[in-house]
Image (cartoon, rainbow, N blue to C red; front, side, top):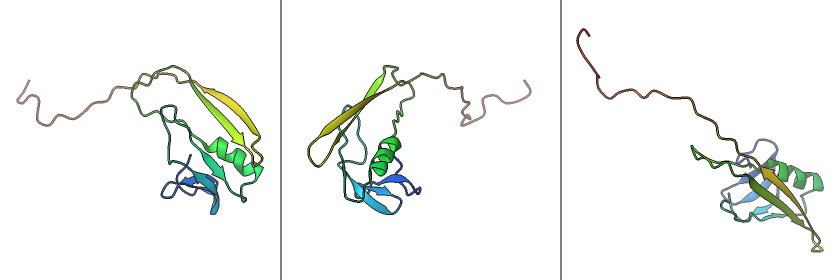
Length: 116
């Protein structure tokens, strides 16, 4: 989820407040989650159905590993309304390994000198 005001849905990670532009629409129990942890988003009265849907669409998956595993990941969204009714939707995320292009790192000192 974006962490800066881009005019849409974003999370103010200083105080974990969900925002729609400049309007607070709820809160989060953490700035990010990983390793099967649940991310609890609680919406306030300013959160319309459309804003809740946009929030779900704004959630991002990131893997910073240079060699991520290719096992599929599963994300489940569960919504609970004020009357304790719940509904869930599950989405599978596929990860494809990509061979990175080689890079050349400069040497700290000359490798060879003279006329070779």
